[in-house]
Length: 180
Image 1 (spheres, rainbow, N blue to C red):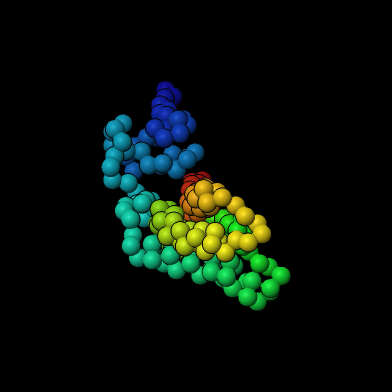
Image 2 (image 1 turned 30 degrees about the horizontal axis):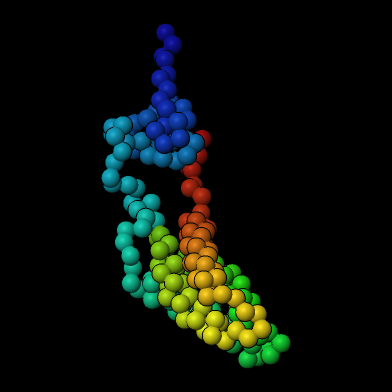
């Protein structure tokens, strides 16, 4: 007599699986099958390190250092070395936005676990004096003050996106073990 194989659907991705026993993993997405259909608060120990558990003052300080150094190097230091590059007003703000994205990306890459909010807070703290400096120093390329506020907010958003992308690159795709 042929033994019938029952199939179960993965609670995470819905893919059919021949075994949904506790401790087993889905062959499609790698999610662990739980004892019950209710979501568990305790996750895999290897995935738990990639969850934002709270705001880290240490990583906010590191982010502030990275964002501050990169912003000062490009907005203040580069015009000192190459006088042709005078990033005042709108040109300085347009240059600051990609710098803040890259700084968020760098912090996301080097930080252990999920560090997404810290670079955005650090960018906010750097954007205030940067916008004030560029606004007060504008001569030819005049831009209203509210545009500096909007461009700073855009830079903070790009920093948040950069830190998320850096975190995803660091974490990488979920490795699905293949048996057989």
